[in-house]
Length: 443
Image (cartoon, rainbow, N blue to C red; front, side, top):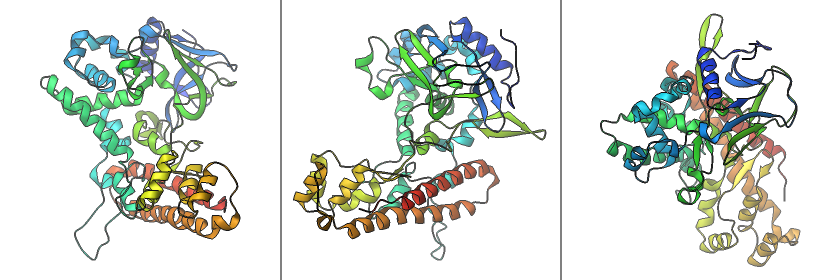
């Protein structure tokens, strides 16, 4: 074992993580120049123990060390029928009995249920998940405090009516859990729902995409997942080390040079901060002792810098578009119906195309879609700019102000951490809107 070092403000991860490191090595995991460490104010992460050069392989996890659906006894798998891989892995970890015991050193490094309750919106109390209505006519109903991409109710509130709205990220996650629990609760005698939910969240935050030989055609792409020991120590960034897989397992390769003591990241993909908040955020309640007091700290999410961050616009634009069937039909025909977004750089090209259905005649709109020139007069620039300012930027700006006020009025110490997370996210949304407004490219 390499000598233990304490680098630039980082501290050893702890005995359970040292035991898990040895457990991983015993199963063939090759670990080169990196180790988990406690990072003050942020929780666990992976740091460089020595100088690392770009292109060096940092980790190799053989396929035999992965926890996959094939790792689960066949009799257990068959009982669950056509359940998702996500649900099957969670059920196995929760109710697999002695077959799960070999994974105990790995389980000892996972967050507790209390950690998840503090940091994942799925488990947040109603005061944060629902609108508050006192029932008094003289008191204004408080808006939802969850961001529009997360909360379906907030998305409906942003739009002028219910047309064209879609469920938010949180509702989709709830539906996925209910789907899996409907099977597990039926096939596992005396199954505890909370126990299954805990392991469902463990799997949700710790799986990686993987294509198992012989099973690719049997599972949809979003359900081709495995649990990969040790790689789950890496925190996420919008750019990081290269993570690759093949039939032999996983490798992690340095994307650049790293100095000893520097934290090393991987990228889980092009995900917005709202997605990361719902699907990935965890906290480690045992990772930060400040002034002799044990304090919860954030473990990598949400990102202060995220080049993939965006705000959804479908619920602002689709209701108006869908009122006119001919607009909807031509957008659908050309492949431009829905998936409209706003970034700090402004509205996306799909949004521009959709707005043009409101300002251009059919002939000029078709030319615009095909990349051909359209006269300035035909474009009706003032109207186009007004739509973007009035229907998008101003609506989001007003939502930010109302929500920040609503968050400030929640006087409940038990949700202090969640309030801080949501306030941080809404301030990010405000910055995105204002940057988009400053860089607004007027047509």
